[in-house]
Image 1: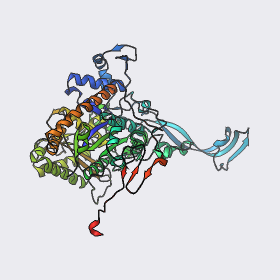
Image 2: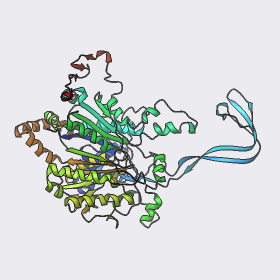
Image 3: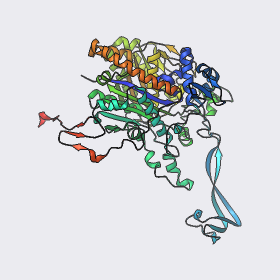
Image 4: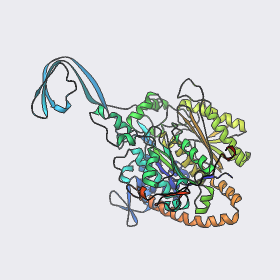
Length: 629
């Protein structure tokens, strides 16, 4: 009997805000939800954006005015809308109009000249046409003539001026003692904390319910940590006449989004791993989680990805590939002189390139038996994640055959589990939808061919990158958290940055949603197409369907007991959400806490016991090859 991998907690942050309890999702459908939900969504954003603080049971803004929740939503709605989702890059990250540039300059026929400089700044070797005299212990005087090479700091305006950034005013480093952590790792701490807190089950209770090696953590980033505290600073140090710090190299690795969670958030001693598959990295890690839970290797998995690639170097790297939406191309697209940064990402419509984003997404998965035992809230189930390469290809970045395989296998799998009617009538696609001219054609071709193969018409298609941009590794994490919101509220977010599909899109059998659409969805297919032929597609089943499956497996009596336990769990989860909406994110950062004393380990041929864990690691193995020995 296969164990069913169910999602019992999720959290994170992207350009739409905090993801747990569907807040970020509701920002993408803000005008289609109830007035009460709108108010709560706006209040959650106002708190993390530091527009208001919750003091003594009331909200106080920066002017000192006391406001009710309704007043906060009304007063700051426009500010919140303008400073979330995709927008012009703000100076809180960097000044896109004044990015530093080191310019080499060669001077010829320099007349005899003299200047002073620090002794430690002398080039090695000293040029032949320099004469150096000592001024004092730290200063020298240089006389020279002839040729002179210098590097001067200059500034440039970037061609790409738009990105899907975290809400303006929300700084992950302010939420805990970040100790010069790269931004992507700061976001990892916050995203994993949000996911664990969202469960409504104390993490210690989870630890006490399973063996230490029955927990796993799988997360990564695609590029690693590229800012000044990670790979960026490490590689640039000597060019800046500086030196790398002791942290920069280690913290730059793309495995750190799970290493940080193990070491500082959950204290995991079970399996760990970081799968990287370019833009499909999250789904690669999700595949590890799903396969391990289904096979019984692990009972709890923290799965995620985190990336902060909105840096000048990363943007210019993708810009060199003509992959990004530049200001010039955006303006030309609209036949205007002014680019519309808010509508820069237009999946499947007339578009001109993708928009970089930043995101952290983490999910807590359990096997169905443990979820029932603990009374966990079940947000959905992931039954399969398929990964296939493209085979021989001329260009490493071009699409290929692999995504046809992953999509077809996911639909076939869902048909086998839920039946033909569910797939044809109550399924939808979360498209990769990168907003490039090539993607809109090739991905729609895949969907069209699969739809025809399975007899599907008017297949709903959504693309969350229209709202939050493309954060590379965590991109499908954005898709999954958005999907859980669709299950909860029954509204598919429309691609509201466009009005209609481009002429070259194959959409005869597709319903590419350009406005929010109400729908009863049983199963969603998350699709990802990564550079290099890293294709992945996941099958996600709605909680209403999972409930019926569990009722059949366990019977009404067991499910009734489960529902009783779940009420208590929901109360705890709701309490966390109330605090988070008011600005208290309860970030988990256990630096220097709970460190395991290896001298206290106890080991015999039957088990290994760690004093800090209630249960032991089983060493009493059976021979899996008994028929061969």
